[in-house]
Length: 253
Length: 218
Image 1 (cartoon, chains in turn purple, orange):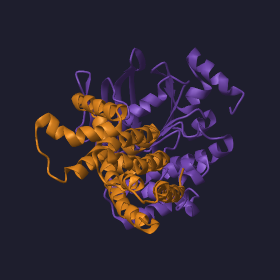
Image 2 (cartoon, one colour):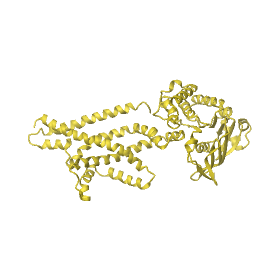
Image 3 (tube, chains in turn cyan, yellow):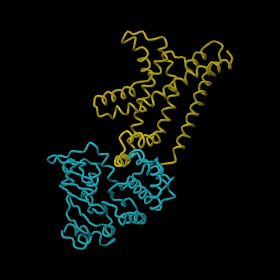
Image 4 (cartoon, chains in turn yellow, purple):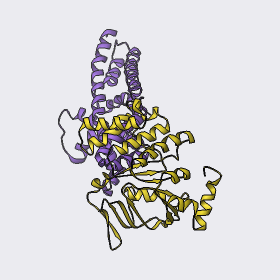
């Protein structure tokens, strides 16, 4: 089952063509990592998938249904995007927790006010997820009282509480120091083991190698290389990716 | 006139000052939010009109605006306003003047909220109205409190401008008493100053408490 299918996505900002005809398909239970240097279009791709940016041409479908249909290349957005927003969750680089809400309220507010679910059930689910993330004692804290790693784990819980089919991560550890990075990556790894469908934009190469079923290397708005972690990391074909990966060699790899 | 009589008279007229103050707050703070919406409207003519309105309100003296609102209906349209129009004109002039300032204060507060808050709300499926009232507005209130306190304190003192069209609030009364024969004279102004000062002290105190109450998050 294809959870997400993006076809022939093009996106420019003014004269700057950021995505040049990108197609991406994610199967249920699959973990896809997207790597590449800054400005290669990784984040823009996620922002297009989550409707934060409007695409210039192409189509996007979730669970086999068009959210954005292509009318001769011209994108036609569904009138009911809200329905499709239920299919995915997005974890931001800067967490973006609601500063004036407690941890619990951050998690349960959208399921209650957007999805109109039963309060008792949502709270029970939130408590369970918090426990799983080792945050059971933080439900009454406010984001400003938490470390970056804790905030990011709360934002993962907030996304999971919507029961999405697929979870997007936009550089989830780029705002964290190495110690806090570890605790967030551990949580994502755990989700991968539970067969959560995920697309992860990341600069953590070792993590991408361990967690992914498929790795995508983006360069200047195109998918320059794609394959299993073994293929991409151990046998990269193009000179460009070899050069990119060599920057990480001294580090974690 | 004894000091006691003077104080009693001042107290009575202070009620008029309070009335102007509270009615202005009640009217201008919500109106300011509406003005902010007009100013950020996608319907350009509405935005232009609002820009001109804010510019005029901030660019001309309140005392002159009071005159225009009070005498305008008669001088411009030849309408004879109702007998209680004097007080009505004061309230209208104060509300439309202060709403312009509040709108700009709100705008500053709203624009200072990180885009990430909007994006998180959007992805979670909140509607635009939900996003504004649940996520943005509460955080804006906290951010604008210090500026709003300034504005409210200025308003307390500005109520004295109503004297220009003959409204008998405390300042007008103090002036009348001070120049009357056998009055406590200068002491009347001192007493009026104390009234204003104590009331503003109270306003500042309450606002500070409110700021503290909102300090549970950053």
